[in-house]
Image: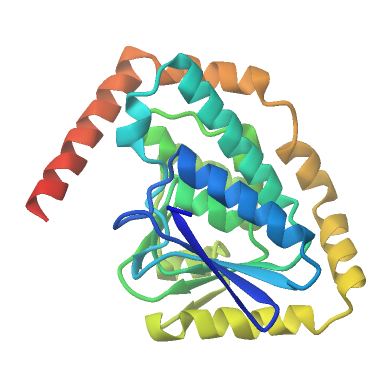
Length: 257
């Protein structure tokens, strides 16, 4: 696989995002994530999954540079695949822990809020859904996931202002559950995973599905109408202008790095 790495340790799968410096999400990464998640869920020898990134970045979110050049069919397929991945992650029955190793805005945050527990590395890192200032409409199912952890009021306020939280704020508002030093993040994730997998498997998994029953109905709802509105805005001159500016800034930073 080109964008992720997987290793198995003591019945725990550790899936590391591994695409460039910032783990920007593109079609290939979605495909590899989706395939791996299904394999792990169907493998009885694996008890749980830890999702992590690399030093400094969990994931910077969607690869806007690549997505900007997609045609209408490509961008629709991309969003359908991404929303399917979100559903697969949110409905994953086994314990799923995010070891957030750095910045995690937008799509990176989406991956994290699908998980049962989130541990973030301390430091000057940010996490949150900042799509609105970028001109991207956040799908309703992703908002429901955000609200599941933050509560509807905070999720609404933060989403509409595109708030990116510091690690301290994320811990305060319940977006993450622990903040640890970078050297300890995988150890902390493994320790938490052991508290889950030592419990009776069927009881734990069914309890998770019961807790998420209403959430999963919302997350897995037919996205067609919502996606039509999203893509109409995606192709609007105002959003294309914002995206173009962001991409130019990203390319300039890349050249100067």
